[in-house]
Image (cartoon, rainbow, N blue to C red; front, side, top):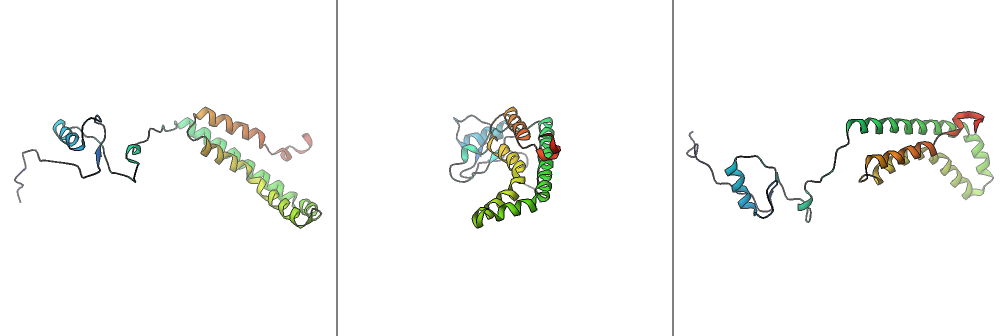
Length: 163
């Protein structure tokens, strides 16, 4: 089957709500489509998103360099190690803590046990909180907060009687 428009340029237009990115904002969608076809260059076409998100289809978020991802992985591993050490010490002191909790009354005992077993999650919670709360800040700011957490959450029982 032979196409009768094989050598000529075909007419093209975008569906309602679609925009062509990479062109100046003064042209409307149909003018942009015609200028793209005439120039022969490829320009990204963006589908309309939810209401009010047409201008935010392409965010200008920077990607972290590979070295930064490696540093985040190493610090995350340290925080995971901290969590393991804190859980091992919580397990070691669980009998002593249950005796202390019995003398605190029913509500005090329950609250003390909850805090005692949730506390080892503090390093993981710090790591995730820094990454989520400082998402829009520079990498150096995140790194400083992660290093502060690594110092504050250091498992001191690991060092025996030094502290």
